[in-house]
Image (cartoon, rainbow, N blue to C red):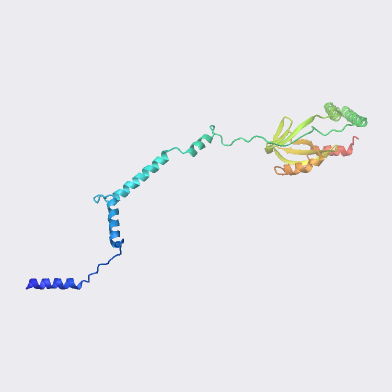
Length: 256
């Protein structure tokens, strides 16, 4: 009896499940569900079998190890940029590379102001020297007489012999006149003066002879002012005691 009841229950359960009717496809077409199942089976057959016993973490560690080894090999290979940089480095341990001197302005001019004098000038100088010598002689001062005569002789040479021509240059190093050079660190100020109807460019030095005098043309004064104004200060220093005495003698004892 129990067996009949079990069979009846199974039959009733199977009868309740709806059975899908078989679909008829036209000629030349197949069931799409069966096609996808066949494709899945094909790709599953092509994929290599994985070792189920080996965990996935070990495979990841192996991949990372291979990547690190490839990076180390790339770093060990010599790079062309570093080789060129080593070639460009100087062999001597110099801190600054010296810069060559470059010419900016060059001109030729006399060494000093000069003006040819007449006989009246020399006769006036001779009379003044004679009077000063007589005064010193009667005063018993013999050595000052020699000084006065030497000064008179120097005046005669300066005003009778024409000066030579100097080659003047202004470079990136400083001011050159013939074989002498005055660096920019030695110069502090510059200014312009006029003597014996000639324009002069003067520089103040921080050592003997304290001044550098260069003759220039009158129409080039503005050009020198713009050029030297970038490096030095244009300012005339106050007159020294010697300048004051010389100006007083020019006013009181005109030789012309």
